[in-house]
Image 1 (cartoon, one colour):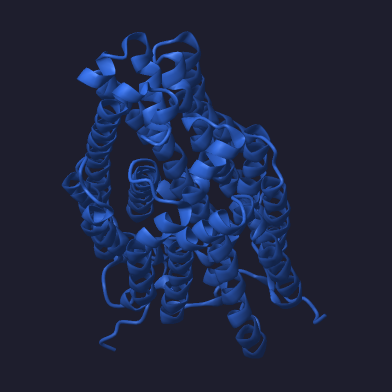
Image 2 (image 1 turned 60 degrees about the vertical axis):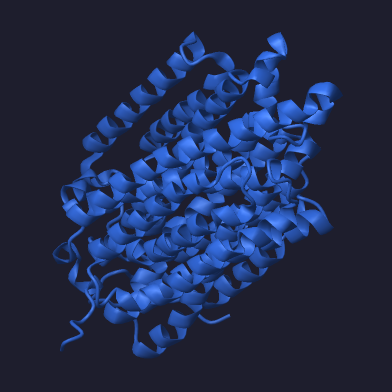
Amino acid sequence: MPAEATVASTPTDLAPDKAAGTARPWTLALACVAMFMLMLDVTVVNVALQDLRTSLDAGFAGLQWVIDSYTLTLAAFLLTGGSLADRLGRKRVFLAGLVLFTLSSLAAGLAQDVLTLNIARGVQGAGAALLFSVGPALIGHEFRGADRGKAFGLFGAIAGLALALGPLVGGLLTDSLSWRWIFLVNVPIGVLALVAGLLRLRESREPSAHRVDWAGMTAFGLGLALIVLGFLRGEADGWTSAPILAAFAAGLILLAAFVLVEKRLGERAMFDLTLLRNPTFTAVCCATLLSNATSLAAVFLQISYVQNVLGYSPWDTGLRFMPMMITLFVVSAITGGLLAKVSPGLLIGLSIGLIALGMGLMVLVDADSSWTAMLPSMIVTGVGMGLFNPPRAAVTIGVVRPEKAGMASGMGETFQQVGVAVGVAAFGALFHHKAVDAFTATDAGGALGAGAHEVGRSVATGGTSALGDTVAPGRLEAVTEAARTAFVDSLSDVMVLCALFAAVGAAIAFAGIRRRDLHESAQAPDPAN
């Protein structure tokens, strides 16, 4: 094994050119492999949810927890991951994340009930947090100027490729083997990446980094978990019930306590509140939160529609989402080259604006539509999502000194995952509520009497696929048509709301992200010179 090089992450304290030249391709490759594994995991899970629901007898909230248990711990530990990386070393923390993610993927693949699966997913999210927070910081340390833009372009393209392949790989594994293999496939990838990282990554850290802020991490994680729990249980327990109101209140109190803890710690905080004084950093974080809250919730609901209403298998669902995912990959691959030429605020604002437009185009889908009616929405949304990540990642760490890249990266990724966790929970709960109400308001639903609400809940969770088990044959045709209409109308309403929230994110990006706020090491040379 070659001797490990440890370098301080400062622009003037660079390793010799030969060592840097050797480390850069390996650093970029390993960061991309980790991102590929993590992003693949996101989309393979989505297309397998309905098979998982049947296998483990999970309800709609259980399916949301499969996503949110992962994103909750991912969001909670991202800040800690960035701080740990700055203090203990980015290589060390990155490799620890690989170990944690790989072992928890194995546990998830072997789970025999939904509770065990969600616990494993929570641990998997903690491992992913370390990888998410450190990967961009590793790239930011090794690359400068225009090379950094190209590196982040490739990084984003790999994420896009994973998203593109995810539905297809997930469908293939689920249909030909089992949903369990969507998790087990991570194991060999993780082992190979771990070996390569041990041999080839250079160590870097921030010598003046402070102790890990465990109090802040605990307050943040528990506060966010309680708010998400409130959204996920609100429909079943009643939105004004004492447990739900208590969950929301306690969550907000804990998040307020988190802010106070971070203010008290000052320089030692894992969430450096002084960064929010930079309007570009604040704008990109807010835009990121809104973009992820809407786009990932929309994809979750769209996949549910294709499988539960249109009746496609996981493999067929993956095929039908390929136009969106291929578009995302192609656009992401060419976006890195634009970073040196186009204002980052313009790129990010345009990307979220296209995401908003794409979600709004779901109004073209009605109860009688085929899957092709979704194509305009898929293509436009794919362009927006592909355009978004490279400039977002570059701007997030570009507004700070290189030695603070770990913290900035962790903060930026936290806003991403908070958006996913809250968005899937909130918009999913809204859809479930609207679908139940829409079905019970129909003539066919009303004719079911006291059983209408329970059938409506079944429709919101599993579409029309399970109605034959709960509805008398003489009523099945009318109930199925009413269920289909209720599902699609509710989906359309929620997608329009998602589009409006995304449009706010686009406006924030256009107005608030400025190239002049970027640190000098992140500035690409003027192409005119």
